[in-house]
Image 1 (tube, rainbow, N blue to C red):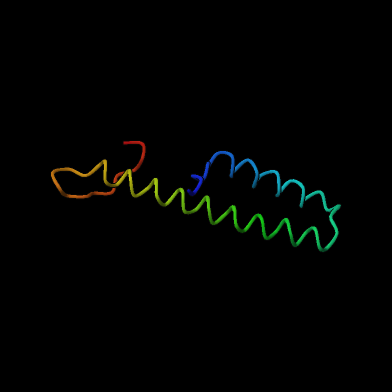
Image 2: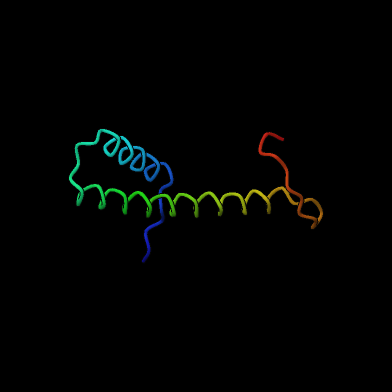
Length: 73
């Protein structure tokens, strides 16, 4: 069973990684590990956002015609 990705937790972890890396106190090896983790989280967040956009597009379909609407409408 695959665990569903939690976007908010992923984003928090990504922000933590960025903050840690910006402090500049990591070894090269640790920096690479944090970078790899950050790239993975970025991809997961992008996938979650893409899926949400697709759901919004489907939900905002009008009589079978899918139109893109800004989220504020």
